[in-house]
Amino acid sequence: MAQDVAKRLGVPLGKVDLERFADGEVRPWIQEDVRDTTVFVLQSLSYPMDEHIMELTLMGDAIRRGAPKTMIAIVPYFGYARQDKLHRVGEPVSARVIAKILEISKFKEVITVDLHNDAIVGFFQVPVTHVSALSLLVAELKKMNLTGAVAVSPDVGGIKRARNFAYALDIPLAVIEKKRYLDRRDTSEAFEIIGCDIGKTVIIIDDMISTGGTIAHSTQSLVEAGAKRILVCATHGVLAGEALKNLEHAAIERVIVTNTIAIPPEKQLAKMKLVSIAPLIADAISQIVR
Ligand code: R5P
Image 1 (tube, rainbow, N blue to C red):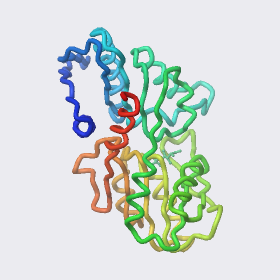
Image 2 (image 1 turned 90 degrees about the vertical axis):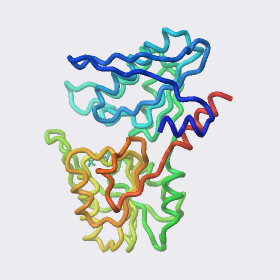
Image 3 (image 1 turned 30 degrees about the horizontal axis):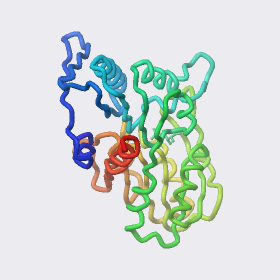
Image 4 (image 1 turned 120 degrees about the vertical axis):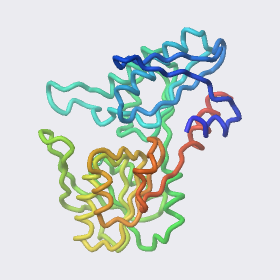
């Protein structure tokens, strides 16, 4: 994606040597003179997120030592975003910790895409450009026949996101009441469907597909409610654990995701459509460097 973004902007992609010692320590070496330049470092905090966070942090330190004019982090997928509040006493507010790590690394601004929770922007003291992939996903959906379609949020937390989609597509909105079990990792159940009658075509809208459990349960509830054609739209294709199996087996016609996380060919299902967010990132950069 960095190559694509650089090409769109007509700027060179800086060179960095990213080496690892035998014990696993990462050792970035910036091979550019960054003095008085504006440097953008693009890194998604996807799996293996802890390694990616360390790479970004150490690259930040290496770059700032070269005296750039400013240094901006582009984090298309902000990992740890779901740990955005104190879910249980004794747990960290991890999303806030990641925000602090980026600031300590001397990034002066951050560009990110479809945060799990908008409030994460408030964890930063530096400016954050929060880009939405909605327009790209909506454009993809508009290529299909959506007559009588209903937008569905698979949980109450996603209502605002799904409402924006419903509005952009001019279709009604429904919500599935989902239950998560804090003592059972990565498990959820779908319950009642609230809002409007489920038509034949349904578009499930979520910020991310991780294990695909949410999508699988939602699909099942929607089929039971009479849905005949189910489309799924999500910004981040995390695709962890049994995700591919869950998506493959679920009664879904199409899964539209963006490339905020690189999805290798072996993880791309025939029903999957990948949308590049490079134009949005290039646009966000142009707004900063005028
Ligand atoms: C949860 O609040 C998120 O918006 C997603 O619904 C969730 O993270 C998806 O996870 P999974 O695919 O593992 O069910």
